[in-house]
Image (tube, rainbow, N blue to C red; front, side, top):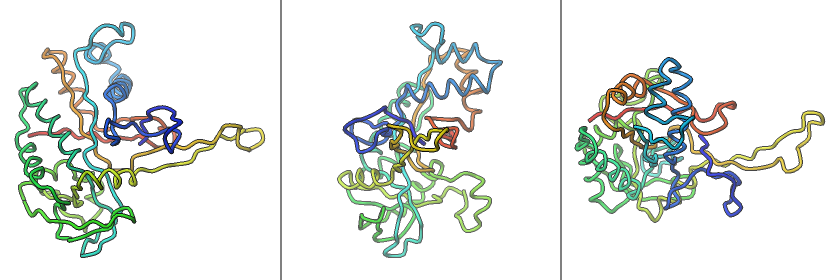
Length: 288
């Protein structure tokens, strides 16, 4: 998936992925809202009036909409792994303490602003944040090499409660689980181990997980590269997980929009490059 922050002369790639204030990948609320709005207008053409009312009208951009999305915080990202002491996975999920603190802040805001309470997930994250070491959840490995260059010694958390709660967020799609007989069951267990890294090393590991691609633009007449037609783009890998929230003023329209339109949407196109198969995003709705 590529959600660009625009051209850059300072970054090592021409079209970098959007970043937050700590230089972690993020998806700004404006990009998220715009993509969801465009997708819903195509998929639910008979509900355009409600969609415009909740997400804003193109004809009246200054008019406040009833609903809004928050910036999507990176929750976990795949990292290539080489097992040193028993970890037999081609890749694992990686996050950092700082990212978990940002997710915690989002959950606390949701608890304050809505009737739904996410206390169980908050408790699980708080239990992890009490630690200060590099942790692995759902595996006994004592060390691992991440993204070829980062040797990390690990401490293990064997906590079924935490595994159960995080398993709902880190579970892989149902098609994968039906076809992979060796995967763990979806019965409240993580399909892939989650490694929580110290912030000092975690940001570098995550940065190495990003995919940088060189692109060219070809002259159709001569089949040669156009002048200035070489650039680079930055993508987050497949199975990356972002965490966001939809907030809206209470009304019949917003209730219908949330329950009958938004929560029934399983997939959408986010970012550019959909014509080459990029940006297909699965939406997972968190229940507590």
